[in-house]
Amino acid sequence: MFRVFKYALYVVLVLIVVLAGYISINKVPDIPVAQLKDKWAPAPSQFVDINGLQVHLRDEGPKDDTQPILLIHGTGASLHTWDGWVETLKVSRRVIRFDLPAFGLTGPEPTNNYKIEHYAKVVVSVLDKLNIQQAVVAGNSLGGYISWATAVLYPERVAKLVLVDASGYPYDAKSIPIGFKLSSNPLMGSVLKGFLPMSLVARSVRNVYGNPELVTDDLVERYYELTLREGNRQALKQRFIQTLPGPLAAKVPSIQVPTLLIWGEKDLLIPVKFGERFDQEIPNSELIVFKELGHVPHEEDPKSTVKVVQDFLAAH
Image (cartoon, rainbow, N blue to C red; front, side):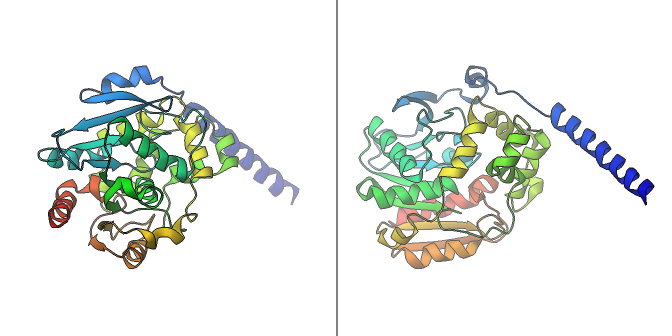
């Protein structure tokens, strides 16, 4: 019996050593934003001062558009997630997108405030900076939450809403990307400080696609490098702690603007039943479900999804 116990202990110790070695070799330092700008912020990128934070922003299309379109990305993403939509929309509409605090090249919020009310305030500050009184506000996942929260808290600034697999209700995910799990777990976050193998990022991105085969090496590289932007990993942990779903959910029925809901039926993070709930509670809404797409349908199939946005804007 003692020999069996001794052997089991030996195996456990070997596994611990192997795991510690794996974690050690996959610890990656932060990258200063200056080193990332050339690759990820070419023209028409600009950096604008928003409440002391240098926000990475792109403003494209005709500047005489009276109701510009503002695109807001989700957790772990950046303004680049909207590339496909922008190529189509900017032909006839002014389109603005930016990296949220804690993400992309914008980086950490100086006051460490990642509450949903503060994110909505950032949106209004961006509109103020650009002298825009009212916009069509569109967002995916966390960006969707921020979009509808802005419509609730600052209704006079939102002309129309486009919610793409939006968060904001307390939800029960069928599957959560492993990167999200590690970032939202305080204990694992301490143990795995600095740990970020590219394979983990790849698994996380594939998890939110309806068809994981569409996830390219270039796409993974973008998510990976922008996650390494100095301060983003620590900020992401705070975002999971502070930006909680639920606080404003009771106010969803107060949204009066025309609202388009786009959902991927293969979304395992925020299942389509939540799109149906938004559709039931927002008086002037329309839900369109794409059967083969996942949590980021605008990125996975920009051509099909932007078409329904164009139809929606034309109808309203």
